[in-house]
Image (cartoon, rainbow, N blue to C red):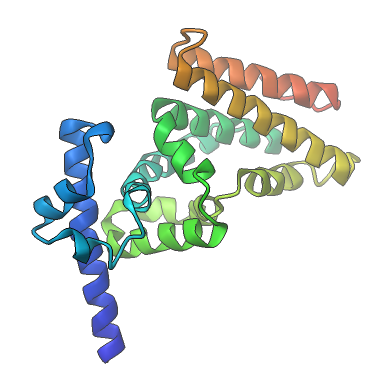
Length: 224
């Protein structure tokens, strides 16, 4: 019982700091966030905050997980429009690109922030335990996908499933997967620097165009 109470108390304290972080980011922007501001808004001192988060980057990571909820909420709508297994892959890419290009700094932090896989996965799991209302019933079946922080592994699994009835080798599937990730990361970098001055819709369209070209190079035809 004592351990259970401690776990509940820990999650409650973490929620105070996460909510305070979100409020500051929404009102003042990410660049104006500090540990002291978060602690003051939550009603505790900075030393207490460090009992639950390693540093400011770790705290920002936790607060950023909320953006995955909007992606997860919309993903079923995209997948419902898929007409084939390979089209499902494209729909996942379309939805993911749309949400990540709208919040590039957040998605960079979550998926490429340098945290270990255990840290990322445990943090996402803990976040949804603290805020269970942030995830709806129709999204829960997609949680395994959200819990996989390694994009290479997540999309390899997705591709492997989509191409299971073809004669495409595992090596080629991994090559396709790597090229798709490189396309995505290149476009993400362009979005962050505004190098090509693309709108989000244009960036998503270009991403899908190049992913389809990769598929086509391996004899994989999409439905559209």
